[in-house]
Image (cartoon, rainbow over all chains, first blue to last red; front, side, top):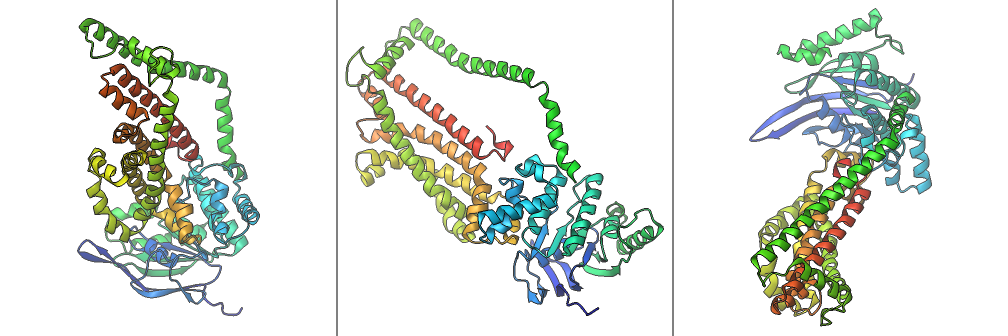
Length: 264
Length: 287
């Protein structure tokens, strides 16, 4: 197989925030190369800078040093090639499901019919045809997150940036959405960068897990997960991966109170 | 994934079964609200009538005097003076001033508020001035507005404009400032920028607050019509009240007051209806 060029290249990225009079080093120097079509999970306790790193890749924040390259081009701001899925959905509440999904295509000056066709296609992809004319406040959390995913896919994003997207959902809905996300990923071969604090979720979804630690945020471990898909969460192999991830994560945590967030 | 999508519709079907009973209960509830809402002003009129009769004052008209005046004002045939059957002319004239000032305030206040809310430079430039001018009572502008616009309807429109402008501007700024930043981020990542951002995100996201401002401003606009028509215009509900004062005809004054109240009430209901329709996506703003 020919050596693929990295899809996302994070080079020497660090981030320092101004907080009151002082400064906080949110991210140390981070160097990561992500292959096209990879499913990468960023895992770490709260405050390790994993969301900050994701926001830098999205172009919402500028790195203090270093740069992010997407397809060899430096990131200078938000762009439609990188679609962010937020934990709190960030749907436009005044638009129906269909209009939310059609928002990106509409920005590309397509005709009204083309926008409607694309919106229809992606609303169908996430199984929300019956709710297409509802407003976000009439949807459940799981349905909202489906709309958010359809919205970035409809915009031809080939990188999905997901910031704890299923963190606010109940366990059953979360499992279902994880399955659906894997299906979508298998079909569309987009590159996914997925932030989570759940070891279980990372072990279930990712090809590759980046374990981060705080103060300042850095990547402690870079683990490849070669378990066959679909993954059986009750198999001994899966448990081994999960235990390994949990051990690496907890070994960097000083305060035991953080264990709670890790075990979930 | 379709189980999820169908979960909600089936839940609503269940609650639709006793719809007839619910509709009946809702009608009773509506009748009750109307009865209570009308009952209180009727009680006030009775108290007013008794108070005038007991004290025997000749300075305050009785409800009956006002009713006669209202009839004459509407249809004529009682006093047949300068005010008989002129109600529509006065309402129309006042409306042109109320809505002239109101729409002018909305036309300037909403775009300016959107920009001040979104652009830091403009905020720093204009915010102190706005907060300095805002506490000045509209009545204090009366002498200057007569110099600027002369005697006539333009001075009245200007005063209504001043009163309506600040609530619209401030509520629009507040609306923009309280929009979840993530919505702007989401829009930017979907390729939305520049003026499209204003049209497609900033404006609709601020609409609930803008409508609050419009409703408050609309109330002020009716309040200010009396002040506005003190500027020496011959027609309008405010000028009717001023004439009534000069002629010591309190029945005319009270009649003018009631007409203004009814006009303000009816038009406010219209604004609420429009706002409920436009903001149907936002259930917490159903008034």
